Structures are given as C-alpha cells and as structure tokens.
Image (cartoon, rainbow, N blue to C red; front, side, top):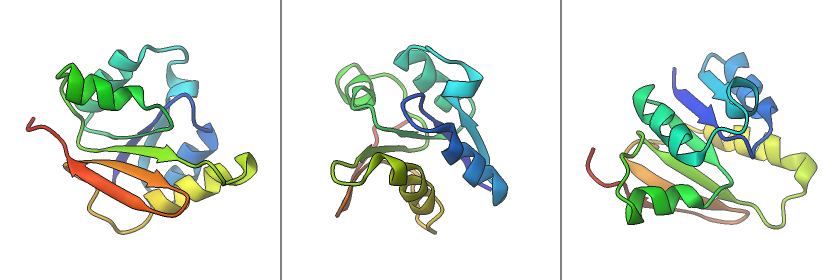
Length: 120
C-alpha cells in the first residue's frame, strides 16, 4: 500500500480511485482546503506520503528554500490532456508499478523525467 497526498489543485476523484484499489490517499481539497503549500509539504513529510500536484511551487520550496522533502513529489504538467481526462490519467500513472521514492518527478503528456530529492 502506497500513501499519497493529492494536492488541492487536483480532483479529489484521484484519491477515491487510489483508495478503491487499496492505497492510502487523501485529497487536500477535502481534508484541508486552502492549506498553504508549505503546510501541505510538511504534512506529506510528516505522514510519509507521496505528493501529487499540478503546482510548480513545491520544486521551489524543496530545491530553492531547502524545506524537507516527502518520499516523492510527482508534478503533472498536462498541457494537451483534456481536463475531463486528467483525473484518470493521473490515477492510472500513480498506479503503475514504479519506484517513485526519492525523486522529484515531472510528468508531461508524452514524457516522464525525474531528479533525486535532497537527502532527508
């Protein structure tokens, strides 16, 4: 079972889809709406959760400002995926058997790349 936190800018349906197959997933939009990014990041670290987001600010918080990183951050930059298809796209990708831990991932419509997170 993987633990996820789904950022407020993503559909809570993603967390529902992940929970339906046995993962521990919380949606910020339902759990704590309007929570500042710093607090979301701290919660992901505290609860040992992978953070999924559309928000580029988390990269700045971790790499520029040196805030502690969670086990992984997955930043989705889906420009050509229709809005109605984004929740399914994100959930399907998060369910892939991939070793997410230890990296900051950037997922586009056509590619996936990563870089190591700073040591915890």
